[in-house]
Amino acid sequence: MKSIKIRLKRNDLKIAERFAEDRINLSMGHYEKRGQKNIDKIMYDIKIGALGEIAVYRLLKKFGIKTNKPDFTIYDKKDKSYDADFTDDKGYHFHCKSQSEESAKQYGKSYILQYGGNGNGHTDKLFRNCTNRDFLIPCLVLLSEQEVEIFGCYKIETIFKKELIKMPKVKWLEYSKRAIYLEDLLQLTDAQRWSKILSGK
Image 1 (cartoon, rainbow, N blue to C red):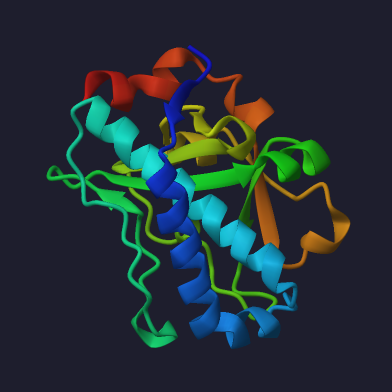
Image 2: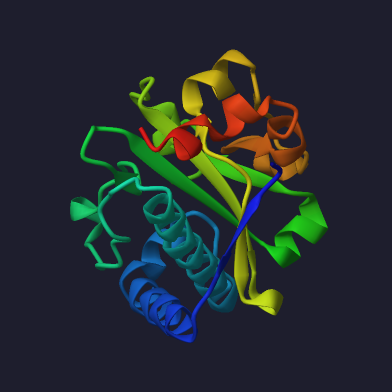
């Protein structure tokens, strides 16, 4: 099984757009410190991330995995958590990574991680204190089709052991980012890609 598609609802778009507006109003100074000044691009990326989380939550629920709902509360920087997006009642952690259609066409299907705190950024949660209970769920948000394509639920330990976290292909990102490429993830077995989802345990 290559992927699972989750349909988006009209209200999902409204929720994601409202979250992006609220977040940019509070955090614009932080983005500027990281060299990000295009407000429309930042808001679009936030919206894509929020839609990915909504779809991943529905996927987990569909397969009987009960977690917290997506958290679209706006926090001050000092109160913001960089923990997993979702945690179930058994202590498993699910990290959602979303990409837009435009980004996939320009850079290939990939997921960029903030690395080492460089460039006035934090260190991505995937690099901090991950255990055998941490999973990555990568997805592609297809606004043109009003759906999200999800490509698996990968144990992060496996991603590290297989050395699938690589330097970005975009040169200027190398200082502060690392990347996971979908083509590498798809080389793993179905059991490595979907076991947590399909077992629901």
